[in-house]
Image 1 (tube, rainbow, N blue to C red):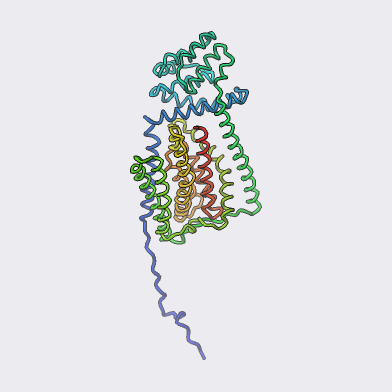
Image 2 (cartoon, rainbow, N blue to C red):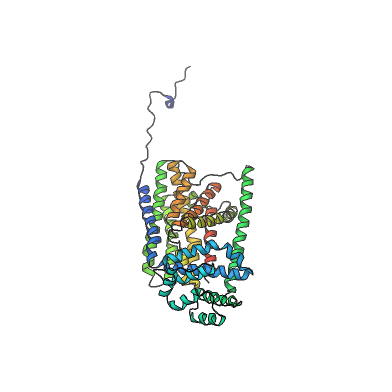
Length: 458
């Protein structure tokens, strides 16, 4: 008996028609528009205020830096050693203050004092700028005289009535030139010196730990361990990829709307309160947008599985990336020294107000809200979205990290450092297939820098 072929094998039957889902480019278009606007806004924030607001903020930063270095020199017992090691820092600060001393004569005081500290002669332009400053005649005489008598040096020092550190340093210099060997005894700031030593110890510990982690990582990789697990979100098709892009655009649009709308509405109540509400609203919108998109936090790589291990990955990665980010920050500021000096809104805020409410708000934003939102946005969504289009892991990590850097308002010289942080997060995500280590690393990075800033400005 010959069996008849089944219906599924009947060659005359047409295969079932599979409905192809249509693509939706809306998310991609919105991302291009939103990122373009954000980058233009960050550049405008970086460049435009320099004409008015930035000189004062920069002068406070330069003064703080000078005080720290001089205090460390005094505490070291041999100021010539640190003075030599800080020549490049002196030169950088002098270059910056020279550029703005015509518009802001107060900058001429820092320029002249630093030049005297470095053993340089004052130019006619320096003296002319000093003459226009507040109490300029006294400053010009004090900083230009070469060999006063001790009595004359003390009399000249008393003419400087300002109480800030630059004024104290100028008075110490003229008395020192007059033969007063104890002139710098009044200069030492024990508090600032101890702060500098503490900060140095923390940075040293991070450097040492990071070096150990790098060595351990490379040894483990060579032994076949720590094989990268890939990205947690890897869209299988075009329509899913479009959903990822649309979610990313929704998150970013929500951030722009909330950060623009809420602060003006609540500023009359309290700027601190407005910032706190904005941060909380950003987190709420992130959760709502993810739920509406049909994805889950687990899809993006946020889950409880191996939580302890992933936290350790994040802490270790922090010690590994921070020195690299610091190095690229130095390289960026040196190579692009012709551009305005970078600054951070948080630093500028702390220069004006170090109250507990302000500090806690900045920590909430910088060490909690920003790491969660930015890692979800740039590593959880944008990174795999670009990879889904280009099929190139390294390029996608580089592109998403560069965009991440460019939307920040600190300034172009810091883009190298910010992109380093973003690149480290991309590598960590691909290594662990979890977004938790990246969030922890980012939180540790921001928390440490904020704590150091608070300590230095206190």
